[in-house]
Image (cartoon, rainbow, N blue to C red; front, side):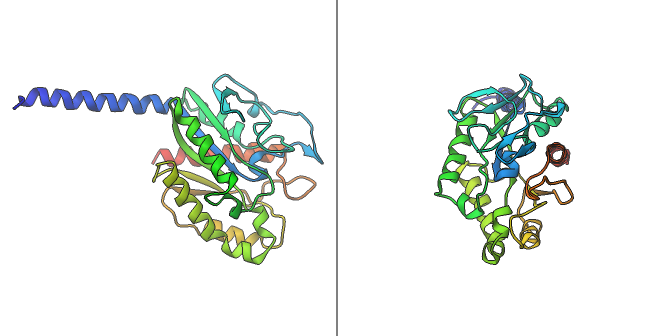
Length: 258
């Protein structure tokens, strides 16, 4: 039988190794950005043209990376969803990353853009191309090390068009969260969802009620109601996206301070 002291030393060493590994992960925080156009970013877009105005909160820095369409890491810059979504402009991802980075809690903030404009929640169900791509990209993101700290989710505008879709939203969202946590092997994966500010149909409040009514562990909701939309009354303005990014960051940081 091994003496007690060596056993304690071995246990301490194992604990220290685990703590060191966790600390390394915390220095390389990965965030998955998914949903539809307001997560993809339409700030500064009129018609199909982006005005190329990038506010300071969205400026590139070597400490913020994005996973590109070929699953390679590169310095992130607006439009963050270029090559992933269409007609992209400023979104909430870059201001979110800057706000998290400013706390000193991460050496790098790594963003995995996955959003696609005009998509309903049923198009994100397990087995669909969007879902499969999301899992593939999230898996690739952690392959070289790091930790998926949260999924940022802003979607539902397309589900405001029909009563049936609005009514089914809550159940579909719950299933999406369960499936994604299972397939990423993260039963406690944090989801930060955005309650709609706008919609494409008349059932905005129905979808908002479903979003705010979700009772899922480690899912928190940021309410975008009141943020300014552009001329199309659906997509948030650049400054509204900057504000939303800071709101998402505050939600993440407050959650991790508990």
